Amino acid sequence: MKMSVCAFLIMVFLCSLGYAQNYSAQMSSDGTRFTVYATGFHQGGSSTFFEVDLQRAQVNLVTIPPAGVASDIMLPFTVSLTLVTALGEHVIVVHDKQGAHEVSINKSP
Image (cartoon, rainbow, N blue to C red):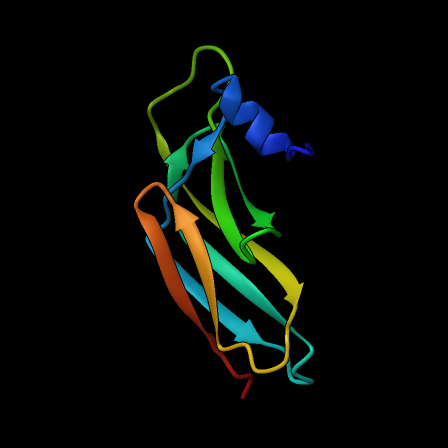
């Protein structure tokens, strides 16, 4: 059974689902791909990123806390991920520590 890097890290308690205050998604002008964005705050020294869950065709927002002693200062973050779109795709599901969020994919102006 293949396991993603983050799934392995979750097993050893190094990373967990993160949290963002805002999610958005934008379709490319040619309609072949879209970019999903997350903005929010995380502990200074943390690493936040999207992980693709190919089995469920969804993405997870993951946060890896800093190693060792870290400050409690919260810093802003913005992460993005660009994916090839399936024909007729209008939403992307993002999982974070608060659950599943359906994010509408907006068309480019």
